[in-house]
Image 1 (cartoon, helix red, strand yellow):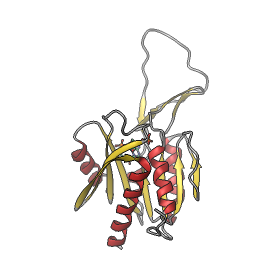
Image 2: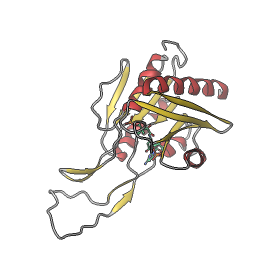
Image 3: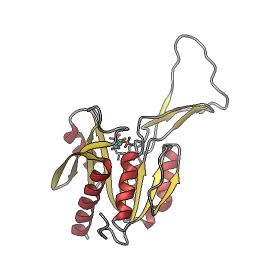
Length: 220
Ligand code: PMT
């Protein structure tokens, strides 16, 4: 996969989960390992792109020739992306961003109380939709992690978030999606779609990068 499909293109990829602090020792998060996003960064760099990886907290090594920025919360991730979006041709949002964060971050460890406790949450900004709405938007690719009605929800997100392409990821099958080494996805764009059958995340990342490169060259 040492082609020059994305030679000279500047690519930003988000990967991993975000962590939304509750107090100094606790947070809300999810099971994203970062593997899919890191595989995309490896594939993009191998295809000749100048690749930046905005990574939530994961324990993975940075792929060769990739610039990595570590972040924790959704708001940190958005700020890191916005700082760089003016110098970006292709934006790929693979991170599993927390949709909500605790309304308050307690300064001290929250003490145990009664049998029930409530948590007030606030909506986080939508990173990929914000990037797609920027003045000169890059070619913007989202993911849709769904447990039902995969393609309908993916097409809805493609339109609602004004994306150029979306990678529909059924996360209801054991051994695929979150945390696994393998995955299976359907890449969707306005006028078409392509099923990418089960393979390693790196093999899929290479196919996704090829599809992105061909859509980018058609639209420029
Ligand atoms: O990290 P792995 O263990 O390898 O697992 C890979 C994966 C399952 C996390 C990945 O393939 C995947 O599907 N990533 C998207 C996860 C997700 O949060 O999907 P979503 O359908 O909730 O979000 C839709 C899109 O909006 C995504 O591109 C997401 O990055 C983006 N988003 C969501 C919320 C938000 N506040 N900001 C965003 O940018």
